[in-house]
Amino acid sequence: MIPVRSFLFVPGNKESWIEKSINSGADALILDLEDSVPHAQKIEARGIVAGRLKWVVEQGQRVWVRINRTPHLYDFEDILAVVQPGLEGIFISKPCGPEDVHVASQMLAEAEMRNGLPNGSIHVIPLLESARSMQLAYEIAQHPRVSAIVGSTAKNADVARALGFVWSPEGRETLYFKSRVVMAARAAGKLAIGGVWQQVKDLEGLKASSQADRQLGMNGELALHPTNVEIINDVYSPTEDEVAFYKGMIDALDEAMANGRASVIYDGEHIDIAHVKTAREIIELARLYGRA
Image (cartoon, rainbow, N blue to C red; front, side, top):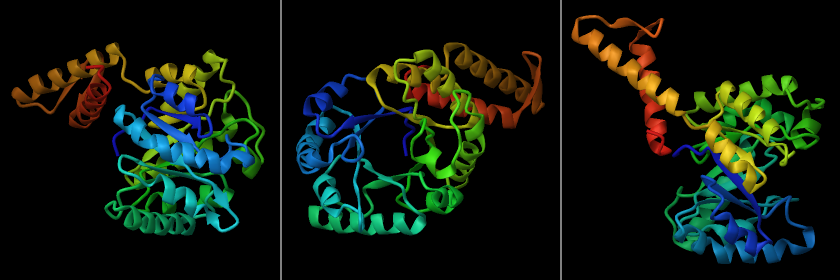
């Protein structure tokens, strides 16, 4: 999966918000049919999202949909309506474990067949919001349709309730959970997504929270408001100074290797081939985001 720094939630019942979100700068949108939509407007929201998906894709915007849970696990009518060309995938809430992901995958396969899409073309990102799903993060991440797993820790939300922790801006209480998500995702070759900062007007708090998630190894995060997107994108993008540093590192090792050595002192640090592999990955990420 191509990396994503920012996933912006957009309520599916707000057609004008969907249209405006195209200009948010978010790497991907999540058109939401679940918690941000009042129960009485669920069917209406499904119709709006299904009707606007093609237009969103035509604007060059990557797009996902968060579907509803039902007493029978996941809403097949949601899936059937949104499985269309250009949809990258669906977000599923509160999976109990890998078996729930498997059921969602079977539903997607049926919808793909009915709607004329190749089998396996629609991906899944599970939101790990139950204690059991957090314990089985790696098993969930291994599913072939799963392209990322989410370890979000919004104040007083599902994860806090499931684990019983008391939220703090510093996030010490969530470090173990987030680190488990990062390790599970990386072990399975998938992306790790963090967030959510729900104090959307506190931009300094958002920046600090995003930087902490980035330091843990998250690839990006969920956003609740368009004003938060720019900060998130900046945090998860290599800076000009980083690009210059890592380009210089590559040049220094290239020169050393031309002289028969596989290590060198660069900017006061001992570096070798392993460090330059990291440098090349960071430069490639910077190119992807137009920063190099």
